[in-house]
Image (cartoon, rainbow, N blue to C red; front, side):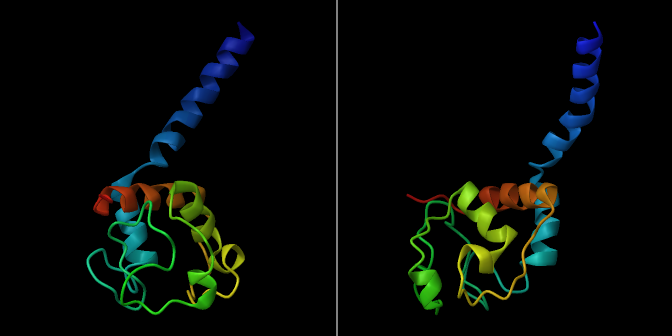
Length: 124
């Protein structure tokens, strides 16, 4: 009985955190605060456009000037690859020209990824 109560208490605490980690609306706020100054979904800006992001090879948006490190990274933007990159871009791709220091708050990172997935147009 004690184990059951402990498990239920854990679930009561963990469930809201897990649900929060996939909040696209909260991810939109993170995007506006952390990414929106450089990135758009429909066109290149200071950073490459993010529409059609998932499944796309890194360094492949036409018309954007990437660092040789990004072009040669061999990365394909999927959930975990992008999460690793956003935690620390310079650690994941040494020599990247992206000046962002990284997002270490896992909850906010999960929200951002949910927003990116919901907002980008799918690859054909």
